[in-house]
Length: 343
Image (cartoon, rainbow, N blue to C red):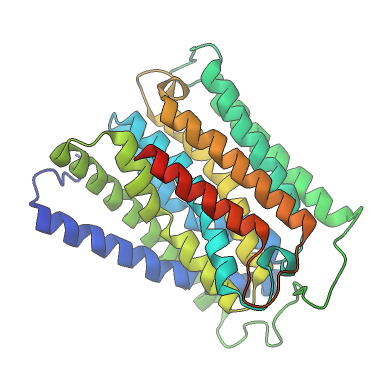
């Protein structure tokens, strides 16, 4: 039986929602600090650890939320949480740029891996659009696009790995570039068991909070009459994306700039799999053919935001002290404008 919050009073709902948001925030700080140490100890580098370990871990709350919503027969909530989360997390990267006062964050965190993940994200989002306009067919209740999406993601990871290993080209180092180098102590203040154990506990807390937030969103939709798209895209997506905001700002404050950028971009690429897993959980046909016009608008918007981010990573605008790059300013304008359009 689902954890039914529809029977709770509004004060209790608000308290539960606030508790889940606080849990997500605290767990997010722990995940970010542990991921930085893991990047140093494993030698994988901040971009890879940020994209795969940090991005995947902070996405668990959103993944649980979308899958739970789809399983319980709320496809619009599952879709809007997934794609809305990708959009707001991209905007979070612009917010993190504001907190880094020395230079433009995208300039300082130059990385071919992050460039590759940006291109991969655009490809995966475009694949989602193709699926929504394709034939409405399923095999064992799963649309073929879900399999293609998963295969494309894995193939993309392999390609990103080759780019990192072979280094056919690399960004020019400047006096504002922060190199991805291990910390002096390598995080040796704590044992590996402590680092990985607390990391796992924080990840589990994120997953539990994601389930609680989903039930809150369903209860709010039932109580207020708001449609699932609005609740998922603006409420659930915002809360389940809090780990990305917290971990990104935390990573920037720790000086792990490549980890911060990689966590957002790589996490967004992973988040496209929310729809593939939600399609499996949704037992009433193809999830992709439950997209409405607002959902398609958000996907197109996110492709545009990611393209702007990619151009910013390539342009590497220096931006004087206290100023953000053109890409961050444009991304914030796009996101705020989109929210106003959807309200």
